[in-house]
Amino acid sequence: MRLLLALLLFPALLCAEGTQAWYQNTIWLRLDEKWSVGNDLHLRADDGVGRIHTWIASPRVRYDLSPTWQLQANVSVLEAYNADETAILDWTRFEFEVNPTFRLSDSLTLSFRDRFEWRWRHGGDYSTRIRLRPQLDWTLRKEGLFRGLYANNEVFYDFTQDRVTENRLTPLGVLLRPNEHLDLRLFYLWRSTRGGQGWRNYHGLGVQAALNY
Image 1 (cartoon, one colour):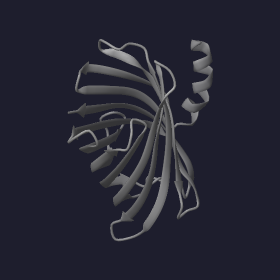
Image 2: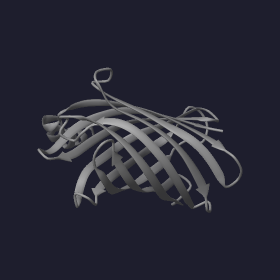
Image 3: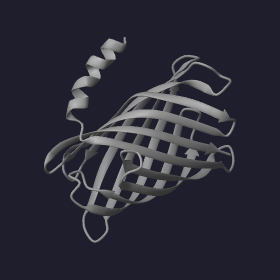
């Protein structure tokens, strides 16, 4: 198995532009059995603690239609390098999500984050895009710090450019639960972005902390 993983990852190692570190913190406060409000903060840096290339602040509201279906709306303010990494751009986004979750067995859960974005660049462009991310969670333990593994893949389609502009593959993530309110997800990410100069590829190592009250 180790040899197979090495053979699969070796071509990616040769064509990567660099390594990025992703830090994400999400806080959710449940108002009642249907409504929740929250805030999401992202910070992304080159080589772990190098140049900050992205920050995002995103207040949000969620409505649980049923145990299977969730609706969510977000407003995101962010600063990020463009796909070619030639300029820093400021964006404001309104995001609407329709997110189903399906329990396949006692240990396997299939979920989707389906997001449509209206995007305004400060002093410039307006665009729309859709992001689709299926995710498979494998619960291995229901108690203790280590809870399980997960994997996902997210595809970005820009309607203004009429093409796929980004793909984020997480082949392996680990779910930890230090206490009843805190979930920690540690993950490896293979990120591909498409700009005017073609595709660029990056390794990503990240941690996502989710506080639920």
